[in-house]
Length: 57
Image (cartoon, rainbow, N blue to C red; front, side):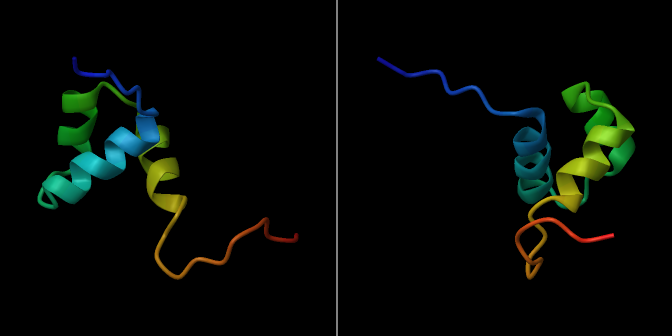
C-alpha cells in the first residue's frame, strides 16, 4: 500500500528544479501553481555553503 507524503511548496519547487534544471521561473509557476515570492524563498533557503542560523542586522 503506497503512503502519500505531503511536501511543502518550497520542497516541491526545489525538487522540480533539480529534476529539470532547464525550467524557468514562469514554467515553475505554471506547473506547480506557486508565486514568484515562493520560488525566490525556496532557493534562498538551503543554498550550498550557506551558513546556518539567522543573520544579524
